[in-house]
Length: 267
Length: 350
Image (cartoon, rainbow over all chains, first blue to last red; front, side, top):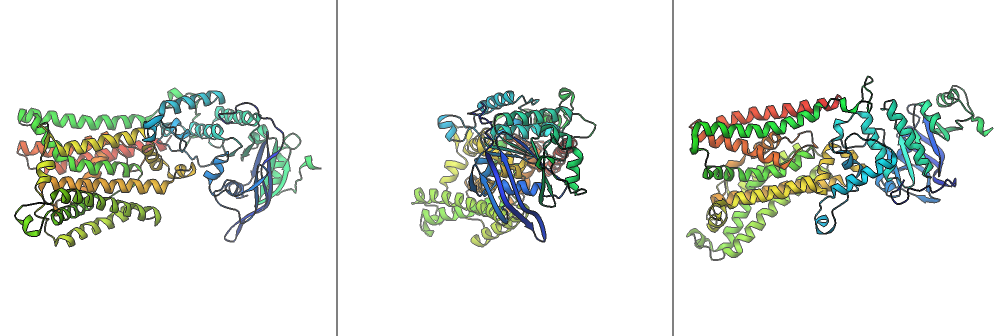
C-alpha cells in the first residue's frame, strides 16, 4: 500500500520474496535447516510453528537482521543480500516485530514517520525543521484509508494500551510497505476488536496485491486470514497446509510432530 | 502491556492516564516552585530582592550553568549522562586563557597588562577553548558508541582526565594576565546598558537548542533514541552517529561555558567547578527531564537552572547561610525524581 499506488496492482501470483536452502546456526544449535519458502503477490502466507521452531530466526534472516549461513534469498526474481533491516525496508519490505519496535515517548505521528521525517520546504527544511502539520495530515489520510482508528495522534504512545501501540506499529508497516508486509505475532497483545482490525488490515493489504507474511501461534486467526499455511518444526519447513482443506488439528499435529502430517492439498 | 482484564480500544475515553497527568503535574509543579520562591523572597525582602538589577544578577550567576544544562538536557534525553562537563569547562578555560596570554604579547608585556596582539590572541583563545570542549565531547561519544561503554564510566574517566590536564597545564594555579578586554567587552559588558552579554549568549544558545530539540529532526532522533534505541536503529537511524553528535554538543557547550567563565572573572577558576556536573544534572532533572530517557525540554532545564540561582540569591539577601540553598535543591531534586519514577511505573502498568 504505497502512497503513490493505492489501486489494486493485481495478484498475478509471481514470487515476490523467496528463499532456497536457507540455514542458520547459533553455536551448536541449528535454528534453520535448508528452508525453501515463497511469498507470491496477492496472498497471505501464515508461518506457524511451536516455540523455538525458528519462526523469528527465519524472519530475521530474510529481513537483514543477520545473514543466513547458507542459502539464497530472491526478491522480485533477483538474488539479494540485505545488509540490515533498513536495507530490506528501503526495498519495500516492512516488518512488524514481535517486541513492538515503537518509541513510547513519541506520539503516533512521530512513530509512523520515524526515520522518514518530512521537512519544511525551503531554507527552514534545510535547517532541519520538521513539517509536523504535513506529517500529521498524511498520517490521518493514510489511517483513514486503512480504516485504522488511533485515539489521539498527538499523545505519546506510553499513554496507549498495548493493543493500541500494536495498532500504530501495524499501521506504520502497512503504510510504508510497497512489496511485502511481514508481521511477527501482530495479534498477540490485542483485544477482540483490535484483532478484527488487524486481520481486516491484512486482507485489505493482500487485496492491493501486496503479499503478507503472517507469523502466529493463534490457529483461529491463522485459519481466518491465510491463503496458505507453512509449518516450521525444529528449523525445518515440514509441510504446507491449505486452510480450506486442512483443520486446526492437522496444523497442531504438524507443528508438534505428533503425527507425520502431510498437507492434504498436496496429495 | 495489556492486562488480561482490559479491552483496549473499546472504551478509550475512559482509560485512565496517570502518566500523562503526572507529566503535566511535574512541569506545572516546577514552574510553581520557581514562582513560589520568587514570591516568598519578595515578601521577605521587598524590593531588595524584587528589582530588575537583582534579577540580572541572578541571570548572570545562572548563565554558565545554563550552558552546561542545555547540553546535559540532550544527553539525558538519550538516556545518557555527562559527568565531565565541569572538568571540560575548566580545561577549556585554561587552554583558551593560556592561548590568549601566549599570543597577545610577550610575557613581559602581558605581565604589565599590555596586550598588543590581542586582536589575534583573543579569537585564537576562543577557538582553542571551543575546540578543547568539542574534542572532549567527541572523545566521550567515541568511547561510548565505539567501545560500547556506559556513559557514566566514560565521562567519570574524562572528568578526571580533563581536570588533571588543566592542573598539569597550569601547575595548579589559575591562569593570570588574561587580556582584560574579554572581561570588559564580554564578561561584564552589557548590551544597551542593561543586558549582560553572558546572559544574552546563554539565552540565545538555549533558544536555539530549544527549537532544535522540539522542532527539528535532530531533536526528534534524540527523543527516539532515549525512548527506544532499538526502534530507532530498526528504522535506519544511525544511533551511534547521533549519540556522538549529542556528546560532542555537550562538550562544545562546556567549552563555551569555560570561555564565559574566563571572561567574567578574567582568570580561570580551576577549583570552583568540581560540582558543576551534579549541579547541571540536578537542574535538568528538576526541570522535568527523565533520567530514563525520552522525556525533557529546554525550557524545563532553564527553570531548573534558575531555582538554585534564585535560592542562593534570596538566601544571601535574607542573610541566611547560603549553604541552605544546597539543602533546598537536594529536596527539590529528590521530589522531581520521585515524580518521574511514579510516572514511569504508572506507564508500565498500562
